[in-house]
Length: 432
Image (cartoon, rainbow, N blue to C red; front, side, top):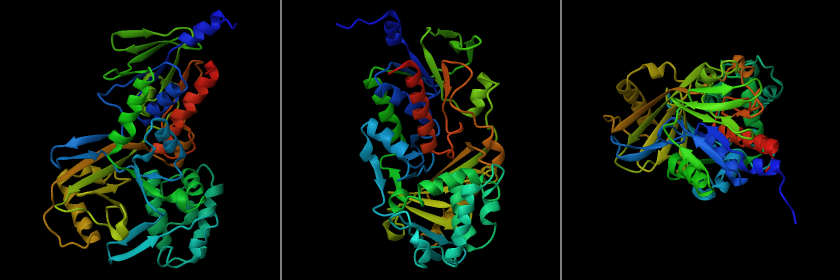
């Protein structure tokens, strides 16, 4: 017969608190729940998801996402998270990876089509690569692999030419929310290596069939509840009580939640909120905006090849997504655009949508403009050294968030990986 020691009984009673129910916090709490540990997830807002959320829009009379978050076949952490919460099949994906584009200055269409296998022979095929480019142009991308911490993407691939305008710039703004002149080369390379470097299947694009909330967020909250965890909303962390080596209590306004000797905390807060609580933590605080426009058409949106996305160059719009009768436009690195009124933005983007869809210009249909002025941290070389690791100087405190030192850009994949990483570190410390 086995008997538990006193320390083992105390360990069993240990509580884990995750503060922040964005995708990093959700992924962290799900990982902890799956391991059979008690977890409490605290969220300041009235719902989970953070910047990854859905809502019923009264103008469009549709459930829409706040932004167009694309998931790729290479996003193994996201697929792992979905498998854990029993939602692996909620993503609608391409049968094969292909990325159609239009240049709205001249109406030219083309499709970027990576091949299966790790050898990228597609760059040798004019019908698969960017028009006007040569296969030798793509070799400059290898410079990203050995870029210095101070290098921008433009330092590696240049600033001009068809391949920059039609490949590197669209990739940079989509992945880093920054132009090639500003974006950190070291952040783009891991994405290139994990997608194009792994072949066509890793490049396939997926979107949530029913929306980010119904498919990624709400099932995560339910999984935590179903496994004995607690999710509390409208609980804003206002401070910490701490000793030299540990966190002793969490302050939620007038409430002080004392931590037991074996209790642990993961802070999965946005960087600006985190440094208000822990000013000694280094964090990238500069941000870049993203603007999204959702237009409700009177018919189903049809894009070339039946795809759900279309890249746009030569204008303000960058990506167009088809979601039933909703045409959703994304503009990244949009600090200047975000200063304009919603009406100005709608008129400007609707003109470009009509060109992309080869439709006559008509008055704008019902539209919702969403400005995320702090969509991501500024993913520029100066920010890299400011990203903190998950471990802190406090033995019972870890950090999670897409802005921490994940080695990846600020994406859903980066957020989920950071949450899972923090959970595994914590479970390793306390024992599963």
